[in-house]
Length: 226
Image 1 (spheres, helix red, strand yellow):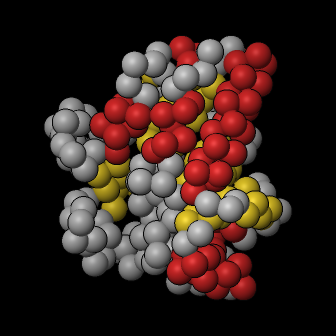
Image 2 (cartoon, rainbow, N blue to C red):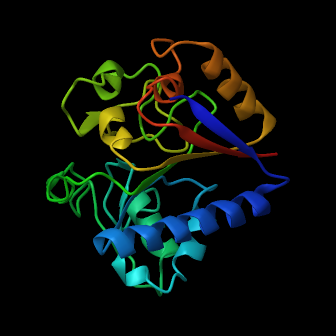
């Protein structure tokens, strides 16, 4: 089904627009099913979106889990769950983990909630990775295979990012695609060039993001700003 692109004048406009979209889709999900079930990326770009979502009048009916996690304790500065909880601080949004308190992979919370996500919010790295599905990882193909039947993989980026040199747990592409809406937020011209490259390649290229864009099961809403 491809993608739909939305260009924004600046990062503040992107944050405001996506936060408004997520507030509306959460309200729709709560009205329809009693709860909004979200998979949310870590990283600098989307965190301000979550801070705005925390002010939702129905925040207590929002349940969120990271799209991926570093295998570090929950109180570690590099922990995505910690970042989500800080963004939602003071609100009644509930968060679930992909790891135990000690950082070891633990998918019990994910498997206890097998329903399709109401929405997924993803970022993208300059190398074309999303969630923790990195090019060069030994088991990348397992995470991208649409017929794998797996919800998540334990993985090790290769090379390890110097700013976050940790093993990871990542939701798989087929699990992320089990969502009513998928939104991708990207900033800067360099990442836009990576996106253009992925759009022109096929799903089997070396860029993981190409597999998402060409999956043909969901249209990806791409939000870009300078």
